[in-house]
Image 1 (cartoon, chains in turn cyan, blue):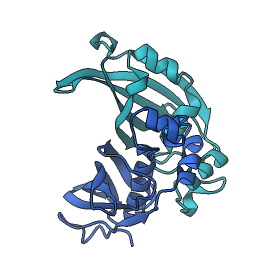
Image 2: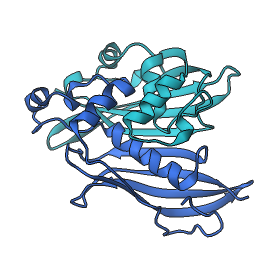
Image 3: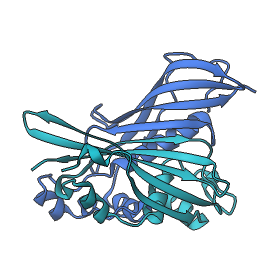
Length: 141
Length: 140
């Protein structure tokens, strides 16, 4: 199970370039035909960082195992984004993912473990572009 | 029509956005586009083995709809924060309506900062994804 000792630890890092195709494909999958999300000068939809993070930071299931979460009962409970400015096609963003919080709640059906992952995206000048806060929940078995 | 920063006030309803009905094809398209390989959203047998009646929509798909809804209301580049809690599941066949109300308005430099409660609801009126957002409208 996840432990409080993990709070503050850097879990993953990565970097990638935002491509027009990746952004347009994501907008398409949302059924969002806003012209701002198409072409070489496009910006990205508000939830695009989730797709970018998956692409830029390897790890996936290994990361969840490392967290001590039960993958079979893992649920994405909450998601928050803070935006300093829109993500732009053509720019390279560096990501740092940290464990921001670990806690548990016990109720009549057992104990739930909560892990909050905070991922910051910065541009080539080192300026923050977005912050993602992802709350994962798994049932302790 | 985007919100008018001059007339925005507490209690105002944001223009709703209707999406769907959710189809299995939409779920098959969203997973790869978002880098989410979870079979729970595309494989009915997998979902049933996990105790669900069948596949259900990615929470992030509904959150994506909320993103479109907020950009419609505020304009590209004018959303500062978007938060969502995946309270209840959304199923194939559900029509998803994004809605929200203004909870606070304040001024900060050249922007009018608008706090909102937002949510998705389906045809039964049940709220599925519940959250909040901060908009920063140019005061012009």
